[in-house]
Amino acid sequence: MEECLTYFRNAIEQPTTSQRWPEWWEAHAELVRQNFDREDYLRLKFHRLIAARLILERMGRPVVEPPTVNWWDRTHCPKCAEPLIRFIPGAMPTRDEIIAFGHRSGIEVCQRGYGLHHGVYCPFGYVDIMMEFRPIEECGS
Image 1 (tube, rainbow, N blue to C red):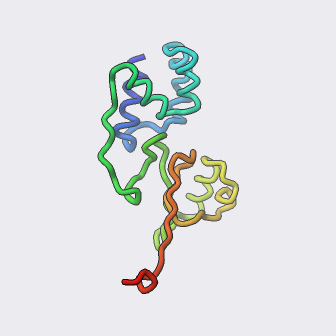
Image 2: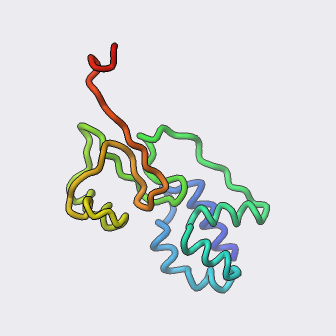
């Protein structure tokens, strides 16, 4: 159990240095099944780090959230630790990155190589921040 709790804490507090959840889960699902009750196993299976955070808190081991970072500077979702994708004018992802995101997220338009509205997106929908960019002269400045 301690191995799982250590991973949960690291994945939440240091997402860029931890193994991605899907790979970790594939290798450790049976360990989780053996060490946690059925309800927690299912919570972890379907709600990932959201469930992990709640389990740690319930066990008296609250996590220390990473410092608040501007959404444009985040690399990983604070809820599931999956890599975020950004559609920003002048810094759009490559077609291959969009397609890979589409397969992870199940978003068909991205699977075909098309981007989304400008913003920051989590493949599991925990983060969808859409932005509108206008020329400065249109903003009244």
